[in-house]
Image (tube, rainbow, N blue to C red; front, side, top):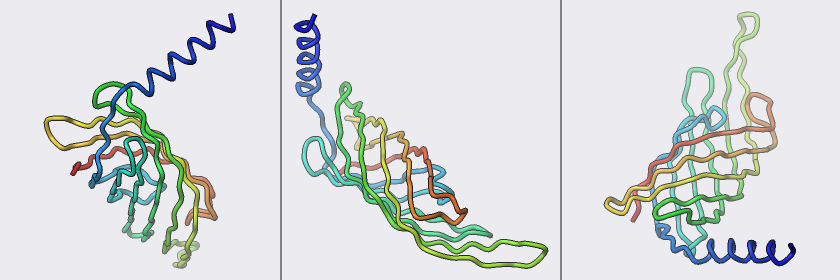
Length: 165
């Protein structure tokens, strides 16, 4: 039984390392999601090796009650599923600043601040071969020093589209 389990683990490891993958050296685009109230992000990915990359995201929000800006840096590991399909996971962090107007008993109050946070990232992507487009869907949990709504945990699901170059 031990031989069968060991053989299965070795075959799975060989399958993951034997598949070729192509991650773009550079990719620039948008990541659209809730982003804990920050809205969309401009996203840039920089390939470091054939299966590692850095992702830089700049998010913003401009509404009647909350104005905010947020920067995120993630280190990601990328694994090929099949052809242009990859899945990835990463860790990183960021910093954000916000300005929040709110009302209590018809009086207007203003609250502002900055916070730092740690983030994780897991997702799936598809890179088209015919056109230099990359689409992705990911989840990003964040834990930090406090958001504008007094919650130290944020969870975001985002849809990304990037131009590979």
